[in-house]
Amino acid sequence: MRSDSPPALKRKRLITIDLMDLESAKAKLAAAKEKFGREIRVFETVTTSPSSSDVSNNEEPDDFYEFTAEDYYRILATKNGDKFLKTRKIREAEEAARRSRITKAVIRVRFPDNHTLEVTFHPSEKIQCLVDLLVKVVAQPELPFCVYTTPPKKQIKDTSLDFYSAGFVPGAIVYFSYDLPKGNDDAAVSGPFLQEEVMSLKGLELAAEQAQPAQSAPEPVIGSTSRVTQEQRPADKKTVKPKWLKM
Image 1: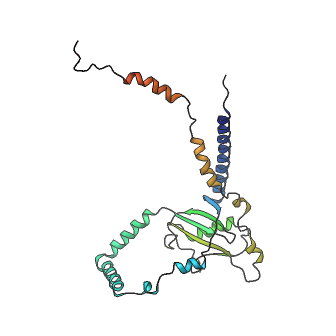
Image 2: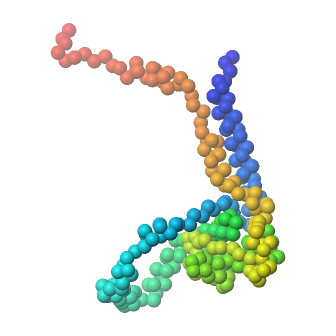
Image 3: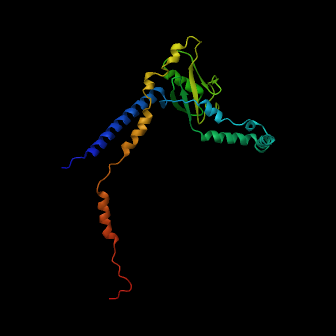
């Protein structure tokens, strides 16, 4: 009886490990979804700030920002066309059509320690749904906090807006901060900002995606190709007598 070669054993061992990691990652993600009611992802964001030389090289000349007569008449023509050629009912129908095409709002909440929480909502859901979720996942939910967008920095105060009306579709990045008086936020600023259970989800979805191909990869069959080719060759050849040959 022929034993498996070392490369075959190594391949099987890797596939077994990948399958174990995949099942473990799926189980943790499913448990988090059941507890928090959402599919959430956690990953670390690496931010790079452009150097001063890069900024100066990318600056546009002053005449780029001049408002010309051509710009004025083009904007005026656009406004007149929208005003006179489209009725209110047509505009509402177009807006409803645009809204119906968007089925999700992917919101990424960035924390001061460069960790990002990604959650998917329906565009018709309220921003309050995001606030309620943050209360469940942050490390210190008893402390007041706020979310804001930037630039410019603008705190999101009206949580009764839905994500579509707030302009957070198909996705948006918001920032988390504890809303504490100056001098009392030292412990909160240092973090951690997410609960340990939530932080354990970091990178799990990426690991599941990388392990998935190993599950469906078929084992290569050695020697079958040459056998099929050899069997097909005799059938493909036919003895044909040339027309000039007469018996």
